Image 1 (cartoon, rainbow over the protein chains, first blue to last red):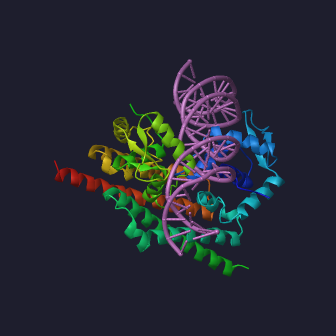
Image 2 (tube, each protein chain N blue to C red):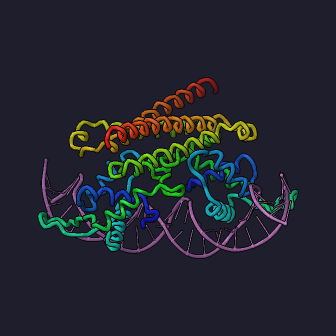
Amino acid sequence: MATRSSALEFAVLGLLHDSPMHGYELRKHLNALMGWGRVWSYGSLYPMLKSLTKSGLIEASVDPTVKRNRIVYTLTAAGKEYFADLVEETGPHSWEDGNFDIRFAFFSKTPTRTRLRVLEGRRRRLEEVLARAEDPIRRSTKKRFDKYTAELQRHGLESVEREVQWLTQMIEAEKRDADASP
Amino acid sequence: MATRSSALEFAVLGLLHDSPMHGYELRKHLNALMGWGRVWSYGSLYPMLKSLTKSGLIEASVDPTVKRNRIVYTLTAAGKEYFADLVEETGPHSWEDGNFDIRFAFFSKTPTRTRLRVLEGRRRRLEEVLARAEDPIRRSTKKRFDKYTAELQRHGLESVEREVQWLTQMIEAEKRDADASP
DNA sequence: TTCGTCATGTAATGGGTTACATGATTAC
DNA sequence: GTAATCATGTAACCCATTACATGACGAA
């Protein structure tokens, strides 16, 4: 049974799902995947690889084809199982809020049903944010904001609205796909 | 001389700049200010208030008008000075990247020149992100992404582009204001 | 031969959260 | 009288970063 794991752990397992890699390579892929935001340092990556090895989710081996000091990590059967469990997690207090981007990045390894749960869950929570912000009771009692604070608020809500729209598109696409294929 | 402080510290000082408050109240304002994202817990707020008190940047006092167990904090002269220093910080390795939102939230307490530096700095960094992403050399050597990863990438870049546009608007508004007033 | 980048790691620190503990006050 | 919210705090943990340290390999 998989319980809340860190973003990095999830990403490492997800990447190793495709093919074995060594740490340095892994980090490059990691940062390419997430691009703009989110950059992980070696100071967190290498200890994570050690810890995952110790718990048997990945396996370390030295690549014999190169002289270089490379330690290649492979996902074990237990690791695959664990990752599959993580991917299914969508409970209300799950870690999906702050790590939606990573979850989305590994949607190709996520069952369609779970994909929909994740997308709809996020949309629901964002809509709650919008509802709270537009609540007339709150608005009237709320302290007056200065020019910049108000603009920050407006811009933030606009971003949230846009993401809701995007999520809706993604959800519709998922549903079309689900209908099209058995 | 003020060096890198935490987001919470900055926000607390900024809020107390307006008026004295007690912890509970402070947290509500904090979370209203940032709204959607960023929520701080008491577990970080109260220790921060203690530490700021110890370093003399804020002053604790018991509100005599209420029986309630309230400790009201006031920004000291040293605290004002320190905050002013923090607000000026815009160096390349400053903390402005991950905390742009908070800096923006307190723009009304930031000199116009510094405001422009912060806005333009952020725009420049975001434009670098776009440039890297659109670099044809990188694009050709880059590993093929699956459907979802590609969409994540696309959506991320779109958001960045939109923020660049927004920043440009903000910058223009600042310049207009600067021209209009002495 | 020197510079960039590949490659792996550790120790100290940071900036928080979670869960817990306590109790007063207000609204129903 | 009881539930919600006001109000303050602490201890343990978490997930990461920063700065440092080491060294091999390839290209100019």
